[in-house]
Image 1 (cartoon, rainbow, N blue to C red):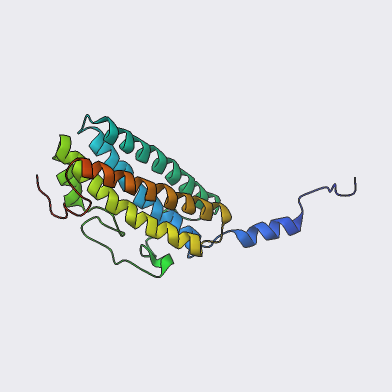
Image 2 (tube, helix red, strand yellow; image 1 turned 90 degrees about the vertical axis):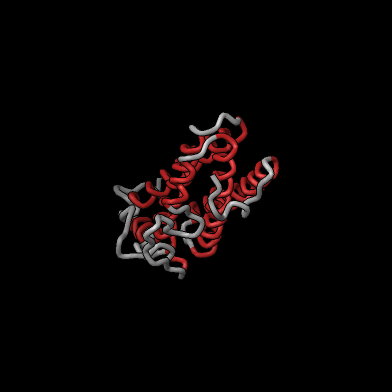
Length: 198
């Protein structure tokens, strides 16, 4: 048949090379930064899972941990596929969005991330108090993540990555509402625990 050739189509290879993101692209920056952001959400979810018997909070924590671990795997996989480092000390967090964050000493590297002190407080709580603190920290975490994902929707060039980011926005907005309902059931709000009460 006329379209059969003895080797790969060089024009297809060139087109593929053009589409591969560079280290300073929004695609690479989002994949790197959101992987770090997601890792903390997974960590917080495992912390609360072991500190409450409440089925609703444990189910939410399980869903968040599984979803974000899977998404993190996809993003680090893309970086590997693109031949780019999973971490890049030469670039500040959020630099790809034009919102470079100076290195933090408290562990909160990007918007919404909990500090080490806040994570330590969560580890020291149990039952209802652990549930409330987790829901408050995760609400802030999701709000920061939504902002980053919206940035990727606007700036990323890889269609699959933009689609993932749009899905993150929708899912995390839904979970923010669920967490608001769970906090209300516990007589708390997302902002009522800006200081630790243990």
